[in-house]
Length: 114
Length: 114
Image (cartoon, rainbow over all chains, first blue to last red; front, side, top):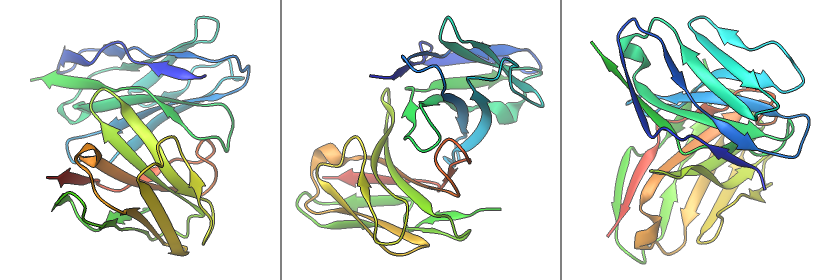
């Protein structure tokens, strides 16, 4: 069965610094999708970044980028120039195909220190 | 922007009550989902629907049912609420499958069953 593990329940970073959130997953599929979702204190979850496993290039969205290591089954999220608005729960998720349900990690709470 | 509206932000119900959680989306999305979010467990899929009057069980459907009579509305029903159903409930919608298009979430309903 596919699983997603986020080993850091909580992380903190100084404003303007860079932080990396870890995510590992277990699958026997060769093609799949990976996601990072952000849930701020307002609770509304939003998609941060999406990666397709067949693509070698790491996905990037402005200050957010991923380090996708397919062989290691690792999908970490790097946030550069951290801002107070980045404070949130971050969830890593996996899907084995486009119509399959997402498998979610337990989440990492990110605290930004001013 | 897609808007997913959950009828209640906080709800307190008694054990044995029938509980209705309502969710409405305004972007003509085919797919709608109900998740349960618990600390340390991430998000778990209760039910989803890919069309009007269609429903599929997710990972934890026991104790829940759903109704989708209109495309924009997806209701979660707790037939006889129990204390172990105290949780945060998130509704989401998407245009295509969960991996092909972003999930758009509501703000969540924090349900307490006493």
